[in-house]
Amino acid sequence: MKVEVRDLCARVHGTPLLSDVSFRLHERELFGLVGPNGSGKSTLMRCLAGLRRPSSGRVLADGEDLAWMPLRTRAQRIALVEQQADTTDRLTVRDAVELGRTPYLSPLRGWGVADDMAVGDALGAVEMAGFATRHWHTLSGGEQQRVHIARALAQSPDLLLLDEPTNHLDIRHQLSLLALVRDLRITRVVALHDLNQAMECDRIGVLHGGRLVATGSPQDVLDEALLAEVFGVTATRHRAPDGSPRLHFSHAL
Image 1 (cartoon, rainbow, N blue to C red):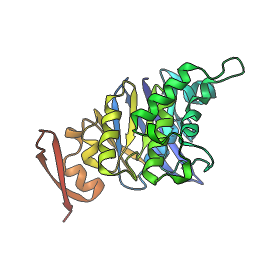
Image 2 (image 1 turned 90 degrees about the vertical axis):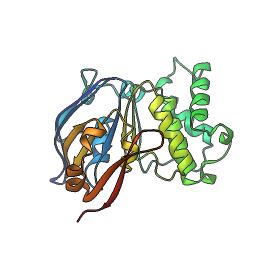
Image 3 (image 1 turned 45 degrees about the vertical axis):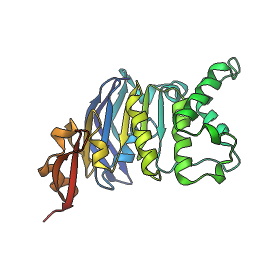
């Protein structure tokens, strides 16, 4: 899916959360969204999902304004995993992931083999297949996060939005999740706090005070001047043993 954001603004009770944000997402790219706490990342993600109507501006998905896209179509094509997603305690893990297939069901189209396969594949992708019969309330925070991501994958979306997806995950599952997201052949937007994780994205956007202050490749954007101005830190670059670029941080003077 190709996405274009044009002059997007969002306000709450007159307080601006996003101001004049414009950028494009290329088809099948991995776009990282970074910025300090309160910079507007979650608000922008909800606007991209069509769950929050901007005060002004537009979000176009393959040329179609999200404000006019039918709800069922939007639910089939766009999946969002929020930081504080919730699920009723009475569901099993499989029940929760099956909710991702809801946009495809109707009185004329019941549950089928394709739905079973989508759910099974999604559970396997996040390493939760063995938890299918467990009840939601028995899961740890990290396990619940992986189930939410599985539900989004079960939607078979064209655009996947992940807001801080590595929260609550141990390091092994952080790495496996990021590898999974990198390998998906769809458009992906991932809001991240860890700038070294953001270095692995195709492009990134930096939000600061509700404004998009930079976009481009992580290596080009995350320079010393920007890191000092936006994040208040000094940074040095080095190479990991595998040759990938890494940042080392210290307090700005």
